[in-house]
Image (cartoon, rainbow, N blue to C red; front, side):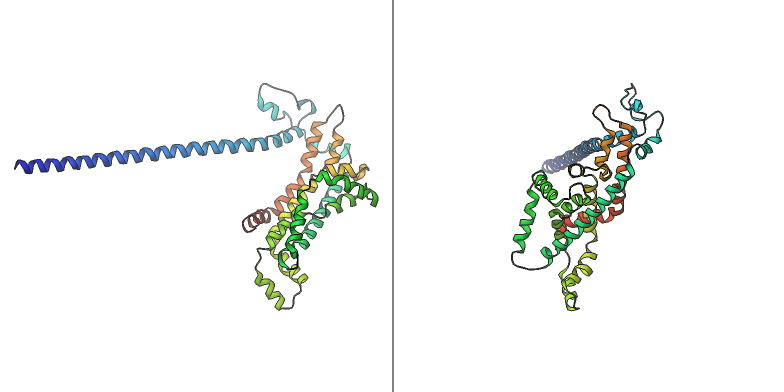
Length: 314
């Protein structure tokens, strides 16, 4: 009987030990889970803090530009104990958005920029699509070598080719003309590369079916390739328009007549050696970004899809 009692007692102790170990295991797992949640919380908090800090560095100058465009000149650099009084004007001066049209030929600058940006965008998209099509869909000797040689031109800095291009344009008599702004910018290796990567993703069967129906290469390009490439074309259109619209250096070099200035060059009218009219400069800058916003909003759906497709399939 004593033996049975000792056996039962030992089993009871073993069961208690197992329960204690399970209890410790559950508590340890619970603590690990809580520690993991706390660690994930602080990781997310740190990530959001960095993202907010990055967003602030980008949004801050833009907000300063908006508030400055609505201030009196005397309030631009007036410092106050309350930080919000430095950012929010005491009275919104909406006439700052009318003054640029009166004090400088702002409308003329606007029309010049619109004309140059549209022409360069159309030229770049057309030449890039025509160049990308044979590199992507046709087979001919040395195709890949020619393409990589074309891509190698992207490695040459623009500052290196600036002087030779200027000398060439001077011999052609194109200095101080719109041709000097449009034609040198009508070709781009980047646009050719981007469209080629997208054209490579299109199904070959569609092209074969068009050939069976008697369609030639130009017909396939116009009727099959281009309609299926709207996202990539919209992306290239957006990039090209934005780059041309904001271009300052090249128009400053080749243009001499004030009536032909584009907006980035025309903004210099609000600056002088001893004085800068910050309120009008910021108001003119706000008016300047409106076409870029319109182009981006119009192409946003195609733009995002184009980046996604060229990034994944390219």
